[in-house]
Length: 181
Length: 313
Image 1 (tube, helix red, strand yellow):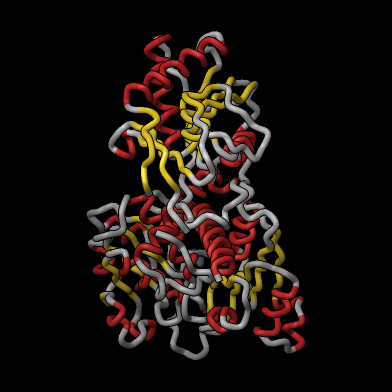
Image 2 (cartoon, helix red, strand yellow; image 1 turned 90 degrees about the horizontal axis):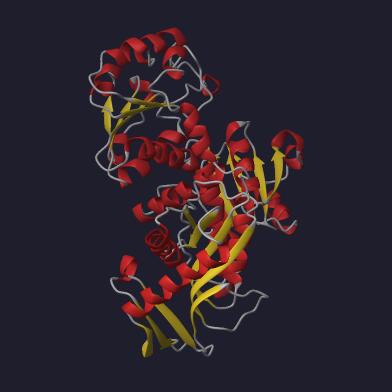
């Protein structure tokens, strides 16, 4: 995989998250009934970081959950290698909450579609909002993000790689060319 | 790690990594069972056929619940009510089920090797739910899952299997699975119920139950299957309980806290006392719950492997 450009470095990434945290609080008028649910793997880490930023701003802890959407995908048989099914960890009641769903990259929208199906099995939030670090376009479903760290025009033969300290050892976002074949 | 097997026939053929992948997946599926809505759409539109040539309630119901939790449609075929009674062969029956556009056959059969035979003659997935004296892989996987959940590991654990080792597919699958994961297995029974050369599977043999329990972390108590007794090889029930039955007095003599498992259905007062079965050491009902999670994992893994094999070929 050939890297073409670095879109965000560590500082830019964290500034984007801090801005999203402010926007979430502004739109929801504080932390009342607010909760975050991150989509595995990187969305979960981003959700935890957003909760930390929200704590810094409001001095209040909000519930954070982790969603594994493998069992809700519509392309299960198309992706290889098959990911291991991981646990969903939402140990709080999402009914009547303002729930912010968090993911790293918004692309076709199919992951978010699967996540919405999964969330609705857990309850009926008052609102579900979507926060993503990168919106790269090319939607295949009628979905949009409520909060985006950065909009990046990309072509289909590129990939957007979000790397986070928690799982990749460093914070950065790069665009790379998809491997041939 | 990628799961590529479209059939689950036994634990003998699985690698340690494959067994660990089933266990890790089952852990995630167990979370689904704790939800208010205990259902995910992973196998929506798929059909699972439970084809049972032997009476079984708990394994059949466990597979049925597992398939339904994954949103699959389930059809149960019991031998008494099917045209098998009219002499249809296993292979013909399997091909008819395939022609009905089912996706997975869960097979319970009294002949060792039946699941393998069926898997070679149909294109759809076959999951072995017990074949003769050969293997019962999902039972062993749920036993191992329960051990790991309760004791935190399998590597280095000392596990004693007590009962009719000679005629037990549960014992055989447990031996394959546990030894692959690094447990030390002891089998314990009267001499006539221990098959010759069982040591070659990497287990220790003991004829003394108190000795076999002494250092064990867990004991898996097999059901004495008196209905399989074809001659006079079996001990009398009273005698068996006296010499090999798992009783509170036996457990109280032990220094360590031992986990008591049983694949069910229980013969209270024959291989295990009621007091132990319902006591603090027993995880028998948790095994039942874990069985659903393990079978969900197995159905999910073979279903996606089947699709993958077809799209790549």
